[in-house]
Image (cartoon, rainbow, N blue to C red):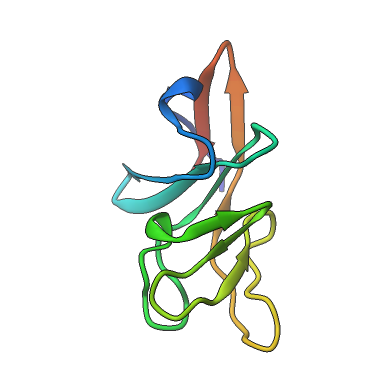
Length: 103
């Protein structure tokens, strides 16, 4: 299946280490600009109890679910042990300060 790149805004609209929700093609996606300045995008739903990940605390390349503190890797979507699970990740590209998510 071919993916489409969707522009979601300007890189400067994403505050460091704070999540933002964007809706693309009926999907709710949590977008984060991590401390390195890179941008990560994951589905906005913890696999445990559907906690809104965009409201979680960001530390390095991880987000902590605001409901039950599950630690989720923003690179591969894997929930860290001792918990388990995975969230969908989305490819992000930044070109000329515009942020694109691959859907």
